[in-house]
Amino acid sequence: MRRARSTPRAPSGPDAPASRLLRLGPAFVAAIAYVDPGNIATNTTAGARYGFGLLWVVLLAVAAAGPVQYLSAKLGAVTGQSMALVLSMRLNRPSRVLYWLQAEGVAIATDLAEVVGASIAIHLLVGMPLWCGAVVTAVAGGGLMVIRDRVGERGFQVVMVAGLAVIGAGFILGVLMGPSPAGLDLRPRPADQQMVLLATGIVGATVMPHAIYLHSALTTDQGGTSRRRLRDNRIDVTLAMLVAGTVNVSMLVLGATALRGHQDEDFAALAHALADRVGDGARTGFILALLVSGITSTAVGIRSGEVVMAGLLRRRVPVAARRIAVLVPSVALLACGIPPVDLLVWSQVALAIGLPMALIPLVRLTSSRAVMGVWRNHPAMTAACWAVVGVVVTLDLALLAIPLLGA
Image (cartoon, rainbow, N blue to C red; front, side):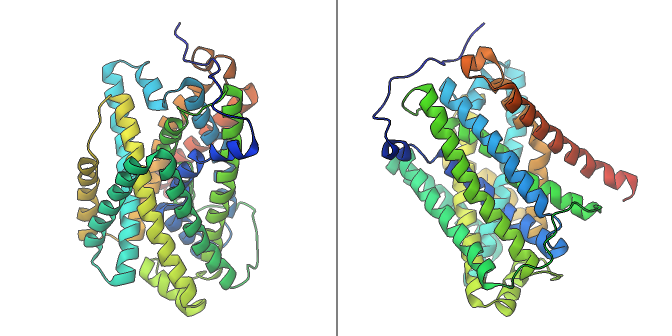
C-alpha cells in the first residue's frame, strides 16, 4: 500500500520565534475566503433581519472552520501534495473528471459572489454600471495573480494579509461608530425558511470548499521537520481564524445594530442607511471593505481553481481563460437585473451544498495511516470533524426539505 511522504525533512533554519513567524501566512490567505462578499451579504442580512438571532451560527461556523483548515494545512505539510493531487492518485479518470466538475461548479459559485460584490462596491464609489464593474474586478483579480508570479508566494501572502486588515478595519470601524449592541441573545430560536436559508449561507460562506483545496497546496513546501510544520500551522490557523471570526462577528453586529429593521437589502440602500444612521465614515468603510474583499477573494479563487485543475486534471489553464469563464455568467446575471444580494446569498447556499464533497475526502485522507503515517488524525479530531460534516449535511437537507413540507 502506497504511503505518502511523511518522513521528516531537513530543517530550513533555526527554530526561533522570528523564524517561525516568517513561516506564518498560508492560513491568512485561506482566511480571505472567510471574509468575502458572500460573508458580507449573509452576515449583514442575518443581522438586519433577525438581530443577534443567528450570531450563534456564525460563532459555530468559525469554530468548525478552524479544525477543518488545520486538517487541510496538515495534509499538505505531511504529504507535500495538495488535496486535489492526493485525490487524483486514488481515483480513476472518470471519477477524477466528475469530481473536478463539481469542484469547478463550486469555484464558479465562489467567483460569482466575489465579482458581484466588488462590482457593487465600484458602482457605489464611482457610479460605474454593475456589468462594467464585474469586468474591472476580473481584471484586477488577474492582476493580483500577475503580481504573485513576480513577487512569489510569500509576497502574495503579504498582500492578502494587508487586504484582510483593510476588510476587518472597515467593519470594526462601523461597529465602533454605530449604536451599542442591545438585547444580545445567543439562544437558538424556531427557524422559518428564510432563517434556514441564511444559516446555510453563513456556513457555506465560512467553511468554504475552495479554501480547503487551496490551503493544502499552500503548505506543501514548508521547511523543517513534520512536527515543526504542524506546530507552525496550528499557530497560523488559530491566529487567522481569530481574525476572520472577529470580522464575521463584526459584520453581523453591524447588521444587527446599524441596519436592524432595514427592509431594503440592496447594498446601495444599506450603504445609505449606514450614512444616515451612523455617518459617512461608516458608509465609506463599508464600501472599501466590500471592494477589497471582492478583489482579494477573486485572486484567492483564481489560485484555488488552478490548484484543483492542476491536481485533478493535471492541466493548467491561463488566468485569462479562467477569468472569462467566470466573467460571462456574472455579467449575464447582473445584466438580467437579478438583485445582487440575492445572487450573493444563493451562491453561498450553493457552496454549503457542495461542502460535503470537500469535507468528507479531507477527513478520510487525514485519518488514513496509508496517507499520513504517524501523523494521522487523533480519534477525537476525527470525531469532531465528522460532527462538522453531519451538521453541514443536516443543514443542506433542512434547506431542501422545508419547501417540500410547506414551511
